Image (tube, rainbow, N blue to C red; front, side, top):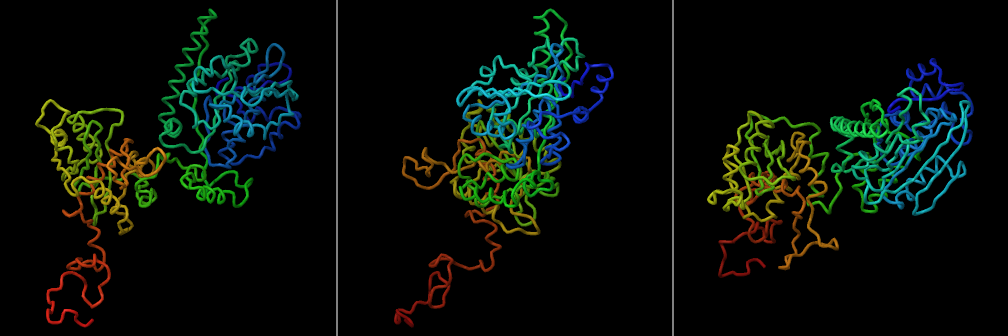
Length: 594
């Protein structure tokens, strides 16, 4: 029974027993079974020690698809393994010989993955000597365990299979009860759509002939993972409840179509298919209230993990593996690695647009145009309200302008647009329209309803633009507010800061040197996040003076010197003057007091 519990009692399935099964939870069904449940194979049900309440809820779940996410050491994988035995005990008995047959298939992309992580974790719960082990490294593995309780024999089969580069081909012909994609975030998204059609195929239908419909179907896709990269399909599927519901509908449609095809082939009416249920369990990370499995770890377990990751130059892994935070997979060294901190520069909740303040728009031109909405509060306290970019589309300038206008009306209603600041290249004749005399800036401005100025400070050189961002990131905090605060909806901008707006490197990972021999570091523009960052740079540069000087410099104490000539603003030269030209030179005494 897909998504519900089942168990078989001794003496056949009477009406009273069926009524009990239909009205009971999984734990109640197991608790009703008496006797020694394969001593040596599993602990007593009442004595099972769970890592914590969230892991326990996952243990008892019979949802069609259920994934658990947690930090290393949280006990999620062990709980997943133990729950397979619980599900084997709940299997309906065969009407042919009374045996409860259960099969779980563990899948990874390669056999190396299976042998390095999945199989060792499995053997910690189910040692080889408990059953018959067949297969070796590089091949499929089968582990068959037979045991009994007071209600009859149970056949527990575990299969380990690698699907290779093609999920559909690699899993063709697979017949199993439950499918377990271990470390599911390392697999392609097709594992779900393919896997849902592979479960509930073991044992054969003849073993359940005559049983009620709810007892003839029993299968689950269960997986575990660490916190994924935000670009990973598992983040979109499991962290977003609306997306889970959408995927549930799609998988239900797949099951309905498959059941209809089987029914036509067998010359029967299709059995009803219940809607697929997708559940997600997210354990607390280290340092959060309710962090699980700490009682089974040494007091310094996580501190050692943090230190080792930092020592190996992989400190960014701590967010994912220790704190269970969704992060971005770094593509290289971030340009603003030193200056940017998500805890400081990303707002915890959405930033509300202030209708009393003007709105500034930073833009980057081209078919992959980008825009950011900015407001300035206090003394250059920049607030980035939103971003607009369409990585999968190539848009003409007027179309981008129309979408920008709609975005502003939605994100900052009632706000007056002071000005837009764009790329100087947007002032050249545009190839994005039939009007050769028009420019990208002009076309977007017309459609959006405001004027766009080309950003001329620094003559479009990259360094002044980067320094404008650095100045905002490093600006002193005033009244608890940083120089730049970004709305959490700006996913591309944040991802660029953390992982994908990076320094350009050659194939060996060294700083890129262009053919002209220029050894200056330059950002890599091959990632789409660079477009949004360019837009931010043009917007922030609008707050600098004509010579490119940051406004924050004016707030530095003692910076009202009349001149920096002669000593570049450093401490005074010997002789008592503060640098600059000396206009009282005595030609009769050229050496002065020296």
